[in-house]
Image 1 (cartoon, rainbow, N blue to C red):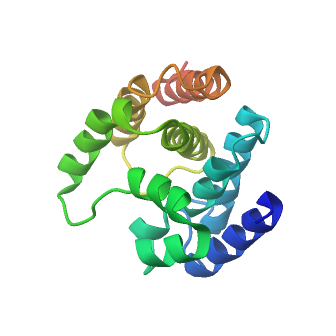
Image 2: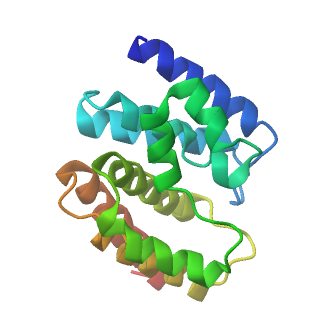
Length: 181
């Protein structure tokens, strides 16, 4: 099927699955804004030449944060896209600390499309944290998140100079702002 049609189908699917969800930040933006940004970052970094990664970027949180199933994604978008989504999905049955450590440990071993999605997701999250941090997060927790994101990204390096440079900039600026200069 045509990549543009697949993209719009995935956007529609993700928008409906995340319909009532908002970002954690003070702005409480619709969650679909995050998905769109992650997909845009992947599309721009790849020149649009990796449509499966772009489509998976739209769907990257559906297994983790909605009632969507792998089977549903595979049936709708094929096994390749479903596999990427599975690679970037945390197992919410595990304690948070273990999930975070698994992201660090697994980052070097996931596929290139999954690495692209993870990089773009971390960029989006850091940028969001800079302009609209979660209201109940302390300064220390924000800094801890930035440091953890950097540890995940270390395992993704060598995937995309464009995304890595954007991550580094978002990380540098965010930490400077959090640390007061």
